[in-house]
Image 1 (cartoon, rainbow, N blue to C red):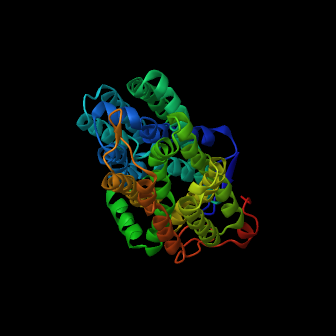
Image 2 (image 1 turned 90 degrees about the vertical axis):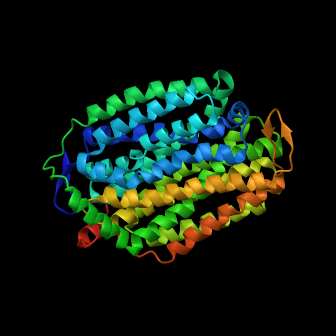
Image 3 (image 1 turned 45 degrees about the vertical axis):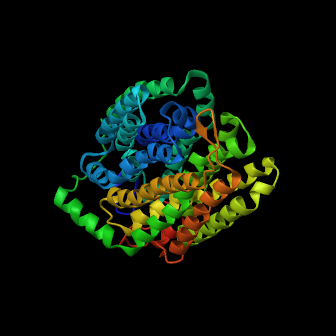
Length: 438
């Protein structure tokens, strides 16, 4: 069965095909999140085997994000021009090649190159999910599909934390990297097969000149930038804590690597649950601004509690705070919708890629800055070739996180409501009354 979008185009959204096409893209995004977050599960063996400090380890972890961010706009162009399946299948193979190099890396310089290739290969994974959702599903379901895309990614991120830490402890980080390389091949094949599906009444892709014009429109939109800054303030602090939180719980509380990783995983579990729920509620309400403000304010408050109150409470309560933090961070499904709705309607990949560039660059910087602050506070203590940092060092490094969340809240205060409509799109009263109407 097909249903009619606001623009009048028919798109199948109740049969299996749209879910299969989107699911193939979501599979790559979930896999990419496992690869992206895996360094937090390898922090001790990597620092020991390569004889590196926190700053160098932070660079190995964050170079993935720098590559990811640098290729967002070129990736958005390719997605809008050639479609998600072909572009993402090639990206999966590049990531697999990077994983193979990482598994064989004799030193941290080669590991750095390998992580760059991983990030480059995954650069179109998330925006490709959004592109698939915008192509195959009706407009009013877009924020819900964004939420499900985040759910797929957070599931991968969760696997990349505590389960990955346990696996690394059993088979070693190099064997895990070999496994990543092998898995990338069937993922690429699945994506290629999904690319054989064709939309009814599929429009011709925009030409390169048109895409540059659309990029200019998106870059000149103050609202797209505000949506991106809000997303950055939500995402970057969690990314930094997901990496360094494992070391924090190991070194300050004396926990094992798998147990320490459960705390970082708790944020991601909350994020995975919150993203589709908040996306769905925003779609039902056809409102973006109140959801953005409420979730951003909640995020700032919880970060302040996490930094200043939570360390003195029983560890069992930490799970509650971290889960609530992840739940509020489900806001990202709404901010990507805001960017698409304020940007050029014909090429949502351009607006999404522009926001993702900003977010990923901020995430990379946040990971690196925390590492630099930790090294600046290091008192010279080492164990087993690994630098140890005291609680005060982690506390001062983590002050960056609520500050970034506060910047996201400030951006949210100036976000303009879109009523879940694309730019310059008419507002049919019937559709506003019933978000599920065709």
